[in-house]
Image 1 (cartoon, rainbow, N blue to C red):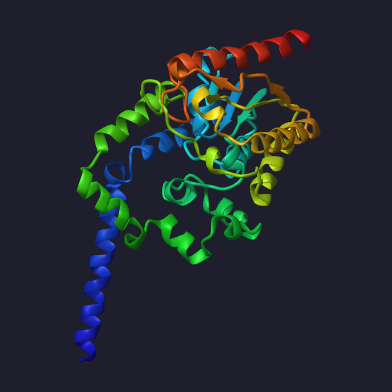
Image 2: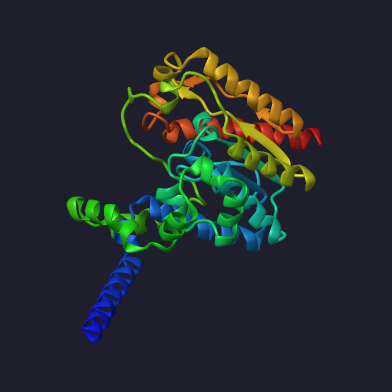
Length: 321
């Protein structure tokens, strides 16, 4: 009986390991197209660490779509903003460049207000795609990250390692909708070619709501604020020119967001930027629907307008200096 149970246990372990190995080798095919973009950002970060950027953009997907590196001053410009990114990933990016002695001369920061309140992609992307190193995850938990991100160390480890139990939902979705390795690799190539810039939609005049329309008041999370401060401290301590950009909503959404919410967000940003010597770039509160690719992200036309505003602000500072 013991021999039988030992053989059964060994078979189960072998099957489990085989399934894990298969899902590990097939990540490009079922983890979703966003995996290609995030993998590109990891590779671009490594590239930036070797070449030292003139200008670096970090933030979330709204910044990723809105800021085109090729239209900003400097030859070596990267947009390392991430779809679903928070201040945790932003701090990681800048601290990795600091460790490589490759900090940029200019830093452009931008986060959707709700990404300063809570995360919506940390487990599905940051952890599942292994964007952070294990040491950064440990630092996050040491700082009370489980309170903000809502999962304990064991589950975090399982998701980071990609144990089969945590990959079942993604596999089921791929089996239902089809595997998408070609799309994922195409998005990787496009993101690499554009040095991190990528659009998120091609809707015509999208009339749909952003997350902020459902929120009563702006309530920044203490952990996310802490990581934003740490990011700003690195920049300030190293003499980096810092710019913060509050990107516009569509005209459809701006009237549906509570004025008190926006006032709270603007006060929060004003306090932080004043404290760390960051310039706030003036952008319109809203842009026409013709400049939006989906509910939250601008299209090519919107990106051109917003990038030109950011570029002009940087050039004005350079002339003044």
